[in-house]
Image 1 (tube, rainbow, N blue to C red):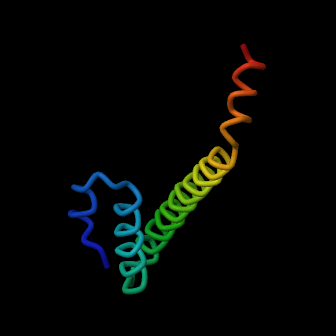
Image 2 (image 1 turned 30 degrees about the vertical axis):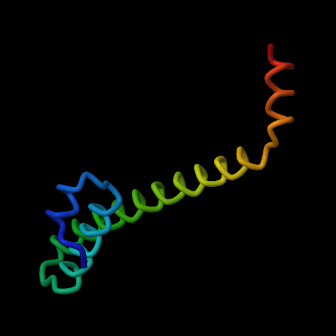
Length: 84
């Protein structure tokens, strides 16, 4: 489990969310209070959604970059000429 403080200091949003997710999950697992469990569970689901959004965005970026690399130099020049 990554240290939350170190992850936050790194400025890496994903790493910080992963550390927070792990802490929330452990807190929920050991929770005796229904109220605390409910609020922590809600926050855990929000953190998971944020992680999924980051992962999806990174995957889409990789796909765009891969597609851009597959365009040949000739095709890029042709597009440039056609677009003025």
